[in-house]
Image 1 (cartoon, each protein chain N blue to C red):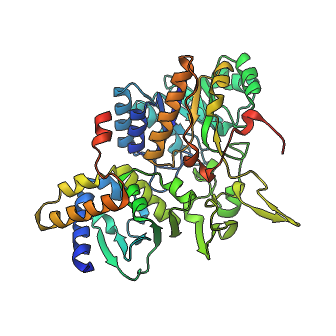
Image 2 (cartoon, helix red, strand yellow; image 1 turned 135 degrees about the vertical axis):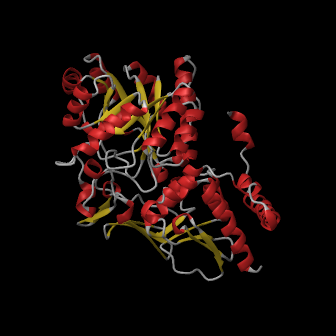
Image 3 (spheres, rainbow over the protein chains, first blue to last red; image 1 turned 90 degrees about the vertical axis):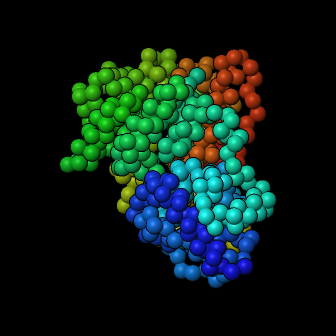
Length: 159
Length: 325
């Protein structure tokens, strides 16, 4: 899989999220220029997130680059965290999640993402243009592979 | 009984309300509250919105202003009390005597609760806080057995609130300076115990080490739960012995003691965890709401399901059932 186009699509998606959830990047505070390495341990690639004060950039790498903090775990755990389905501390204490480097930056990112109440399916719905279709396919694949439900219909029905 | 639930973010507050919390406690994003961690807590605007949301669904909001003001910087704490009243808080949770006096004198209509950080552990001191500062509720420190709590409630009219779930502290809250020795920062003065900026985890050959301020405080093998990054739960060697010298890395779960706590006259049950996710908040609140509803209706307690969410993945009933080891 060519990584550059996927990196572009993920950057576009993350910038859309930054616009729709501006408080998420504000919550990073002094860590909004840190480099975060998100490492799905069951995939052969790592993802580097640079918030860049609300102008985020995402790149995929086959060899992990230098970063301030590394958060590693199965793809299901990482997606579940972003989607708010799992508790980060519980995953960490059970050793399903590994945190290395700047713990404060990793904690700020975890808390910022948790507060944003991201609905990954809704974020993709909001993405128009040529990026939408490949991302839909990617998310379908992630949903099948991880077993994490990436829509909130159930939760919304309860309220 | 009332359940008092944590919220470190506006999303967690909404999750707590949706899950059935009677009351939510939270804090401003500064040193005035004892959970001053990166990415957590509420701006003034978020607090006002959160309180409006909670009130709209019949829940109350308490604001923790429970650190101890520094000399020369009292205005930060005074402003927090004033802003809490402006935001519509149902009460403030305070620990410092000076701040209690300030709140009582300047914001007499703002209900005052005594934080666990004040470590008020007998009826005399609780009644003193009531008569001098108009305190309406006291959060009891986690040093008391159920009969001791019953004895306190017999001798005071002030409401009592006790912790039932979450992380445990060394047994004299508000008086612990362990974090200061390794990092220079403490929960009492800065709102941070073992601040994340001083915590580092290192994994080598399957062994995971927790370091605080450069000191390795615990190291575990491949199949063990990750070590907790506080000195109180560290594992140390002394002579030919190695062990958890201060306390075991276990978490409180007093769910099964709810009927006894009700009988002991406790008004409210507190869940720890403002640093935890909204997923944790929702699950724990749902569980405890079901438990108190069952107790109130005279039904047996539902089966607990919270072990996996506990810090250290192991639970205890703490001091409520005191035993020597």
